[in-house]
Amino acid sequence: MILADAHCHLNHELYKNELDALLERSKEAGVKAIICSGVNVPTNREALALARKYAPLVRCSLGIYPVDALGLPADETGLARQVHPIDMDAELEFIKQNKENIAGIGEAGLDFHWVKDKQLREKEKENFAKIIKLAEDIKKPLIVHTRDAETECVEMLESSSVKTVILHCFTGRKHIIKKAIDKGYFFSIPAIIQKLQHFKMVAEMASINQLLSETDGPWLSPIPGKPNEPANVLYVIRNIAQVKNFTEEEVANNLWLNFQRVFG
Ligand SMILES: [Zn+2]
Image 1 (cartoon, rainbow, N blue to C red):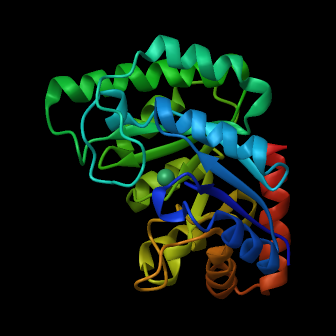
Image 2 (image 1 turned 45 degrees about the vertical axis):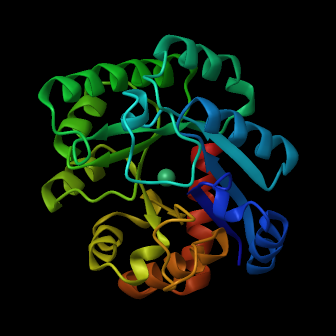
């Protein structure tokens, strides 16, 4: 089976001493492509360096996480932190200059779970608008993170001309999922689908041609007590096969084609 992990964080400190072994396990499981996503100034550089070192297996996307853009401490730890608001224009320029070296832009989006302040939420929208504009300009797929802001997020994407939208770990409600399906967006289904009914529902609702697999490793592990890793995309294949009544082989082939269509 040929597999792909469309979104993870190989630069996380949990992987530091075992990245080679982890990539070996990925290859043994059939993983042929991994996209490591940056989220801020330091991690964008780390993701680029990993993609350079481990090409062609590892590729990268560069992004600005909505919470990091504001310079706020986030809930997730273990990645290099952004403690001051990001100079958005400078970082977007950096991404633009690296357009030949990246598979896409992201992760980026809107997070209202972590940000409650009204003004800061407006600022998030402003920042996201700039990132959308960059994705339009350099014609790269946009890997979107959104939490508790799905409606606003999809609305912003709808009025854009971004070529390819990938909703990663999308937790929006049914009617918003439906809307995103109609817009032709892709859903990157995480390995935690093994445990979370929500993602089984997303996989069931969307066409097989709109699905990708990811782990978001080291987070969202399907295996208790163990950090998530790219080889676990097998769980995605298995669960999609179950809800759609396809063979695992069929699902893997379809998702690999989708991955190539999206990221080239
Ligand atoms: Zn992520």
